Length: 435
Image (tube, rainbow, N blue to C red; front, side):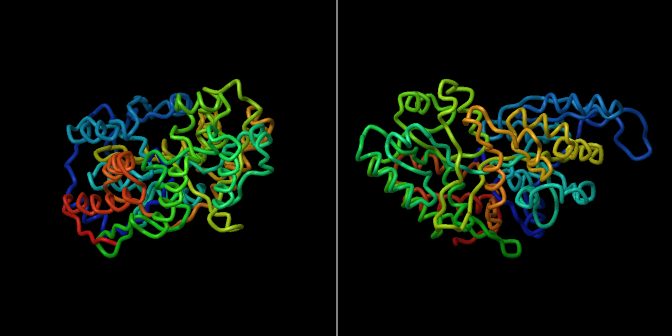
């Protein structure tokens, strides 16, 4: 998942068992630990690996903390090799002290013994962040990362095309969404109301909205429930739209095919996280003023439930000899007002409660015709169900879903990946049942 803010809750017994069974020993290199042991003095040097635009925040930290220097190293995003690079470096004793870890990847990294329990360093400050992000950064009551950003889901829509096709308001429910899609198709079959599911992240985010999780734990055993009623409802809904030709085959923000279709007025909406606004602004400048933002449609009228896709934490990595200083930096990145403001400017929607009230997020956005889109993002972030649990093999799930969704129907993909995920967890040596 890209993604993502998908909830992570684990029992400590499970996390401990996983680490004991599959942890890799790690030592840390001197480059990350100039003042490593209690009683030592001198400057601390630490590396921080990630792919987001953190460079300016690191500079702000270094300017204010001359005795604790952080060096930022840009790596590929986690799912594109970043996590493998981090894990390999830790195994070789050359790992960073800090790393950007997406919420859904924290259990996988814990199974590899790559992330450190930093509860004693940061627990007093976790109340600064939205509860969903705290939950996503924690396992069994232990904190394995300081939340940085979240990805509240919304509906992006074309005001001008809504008017053209007689759609008076954004659909509040998925039933209204389908009705609007049918209305557009009746007027012009070449025009699509929205975009179809294309990857596992999308399916996970839509499933999260239903309140039914793909995983649960009991004692030290996992239960896999990807093929649950909520996810099957999502899969069948989108398969129906796809079969009837009501949604485009393209992706959305940053997808060249979507950009071409949008420019030609051939697609009216897409559902994605707050960060997707950056794709519109960078690739579809000519459509400024024509897009608007509305709440994500719900399954039941008035229930307000939303979802989240994406977001990450700053984790202290196994082998870091200066975890206290590393945790201080992580807290600064997520909680310092100026650092949060810098992150917002880089396209991050903050997990910090105070950050979500930053004046820059309360202003009208010129691209969206002056709409105060921050209000929509904030409302969405507050309505994400807290019932989601992530699993220990998320990259396997993403890969398997992408393959199955590309070759068959969405419901079939759900069934296939249910089975392949149970098998994958068994291969880790963990106790697992088929839910």
